Length: 136
Image (cartoon, rainbow, N blue to C red):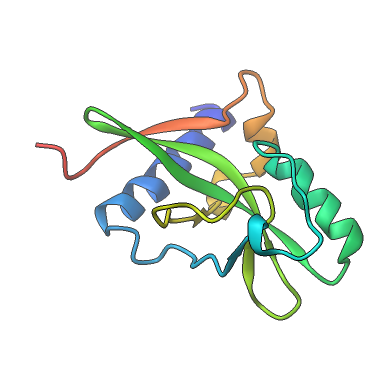
């Protein structure tokens, strides 16, 4: 098994387990871009927006992970996403406005290796499909 296959297997396992457990371990998001005073993000550029935020708020840190994007029959599609953990401990999304429906965020598992190496690799893996354990 190659390093990429090992990383993808670890990621699929973590996301599949999160789905099976109905996202009970998902990280709660405490705030969104539309409620951050003086902040005007570019949508769909979360990794860049987090980097810009960190330049302005050096005590904060990036949190990389995955959010369910859609249901594809018997699979759930997850999209790579970046959030910010503030120095005060809050998890905020600096790229998107408050969603109509809360979406879970699963932190990138260490066993899956480097987040950016995976999403910018060859091939780039910014989306990943995981079997839905509840599909019958």
